[in-house]
Length: 61
Image (cartoon, rainbow, N blue to C red; front, side, top):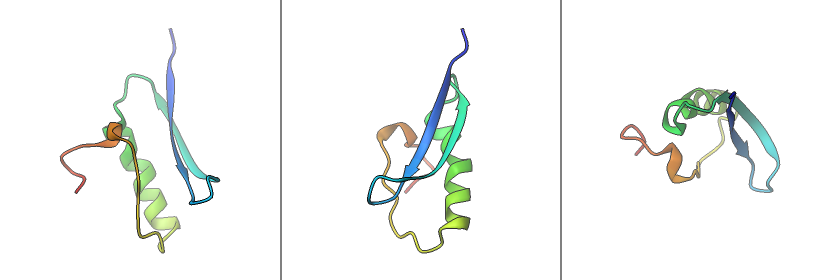
């Protein structure tokens, strides 16, 4: 069985501004970093990032 998941970034109005598709067996705390880095480069004025507990890791403060 093939399984995929997506990490999706939305603005304050709920519009999708970026996303990343990964294999379903990759934990959110691993797949999060590529999308986060890309978002920081493309949207420098972002001050807050809100995510669910799936992206939690010891590297996020």
